[in-house]
Image (cartoon, rainbow, N blue to C red; front, side):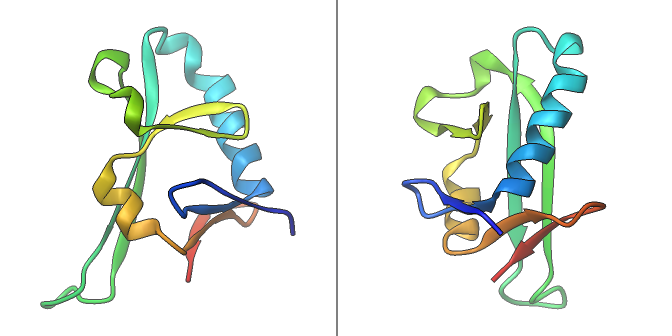
Length: 103
């Protein structure tokens, strides 16, 4: 498995980068001025402690500050500070059917 690391500490597999590029290529024509936005939440306490969710959506390029834009493979993705903190030293991987976040 080929792994990559962003300066922020986020680790992703080549399979995830390929998945992201495929999704971007399929959907980008419906989102001409938009940027993919990756969000991630992990609960540390309460009834949902230990559970996590990730989401990939399109947001307006005007809402995606340049300091939060990262290149994953050939795709520009907006990942806000909170999501970066949650994903630091974790790995995003596509297993052929699902995106998984590994510790």
